[in-house]
Length: 134
Image (cartoon, rainbow, N blue to C red):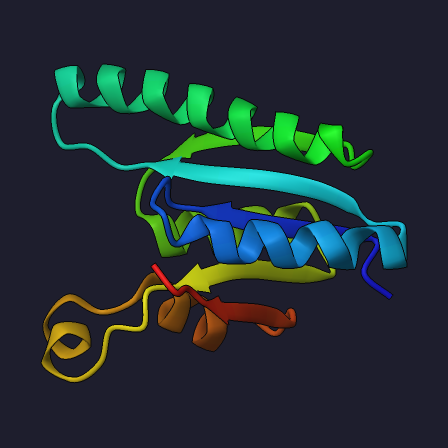
């Protein structure tokens, strides 16, 4: 059912919830896991720093999956997170987009929006959202 699962990471403690969930789900479906981190920066210096941190973070998460026998492809892209996640998911024809949510509510989401909310409303691909305890 879920041959390719795109796991969107934001390099925050909230990622733990989706990593744990996909660690259990992927073996059941014999899924290929693709880890994606969208680096977002406004200056060249920020981009260099964000890029290095993102590459290292995604590699660390891939190692966690590998220790459980799950091979995970690693991808770092640049731009607006929701847009890049949706564009990548469609281009790679994934079967499921998996993300953690921070559980913001009310005025925060009204003012700042939510990547997970944009993604779930912007694609027809199933989206799995797991609320973080962090």
